[in-house]
Image (cartoon, rainbow, N blue to C red; front, side, top):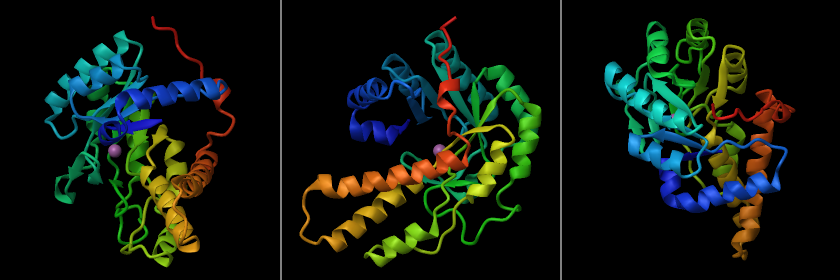
Length: 275
Ligand code: CO
């Protein structure tokens, strides 16, 4: 379960952590990680590490290489002392995601020749890489091909750091069915394409172990709520339309979990002792 800085501000840190603690009680057979997405600084990461998160991301990718290493290293040292794992980022993605806003000109692919030094100097557990994906719903104006979405780059990076889990941000597939549904029930959407599921499945063969698909969850919920309101114009109980939204998000996540090979893996994940 991943929480951005914006989501943490929206929902309140303590409520979020207690909700996840409740989920741990309700679903004892499912190992649950609580992860901070795009931690902007040491203080935010420390607050999450001290406050019940099991995993944090420090995103210093907009800083120069040496500064990214230094800040990531600082978070890794504190996190590992507290049994928390760290995701770092090298290369920057275009697009908008809560607090993260990078223009297309400022985005740059991860350079494979930098990853070994970065991982060995920082000790990060996983690495977010930029391979042409972008945050938000507006990723590509046409179905992406190999020249804009570089699975080849995933292979090159994985070959250099085979023991580091790779992370794909901005990897929603932006299914056309959701866009059509949203338009059909009164919403507006410009033409846009996401990252095809089959491309992600290919990347998973080369070390990708975390795939961020928040936009797809947002689209699924929005489509369901719009449909519900149009079909039930007199409805006003939030539980009714949020139930529809919840069902749509469950269905969407389930189909991705199955496509990504997560099915049946829970029992293989064992917590590591602190030392
Ligand atoms: Co991201």
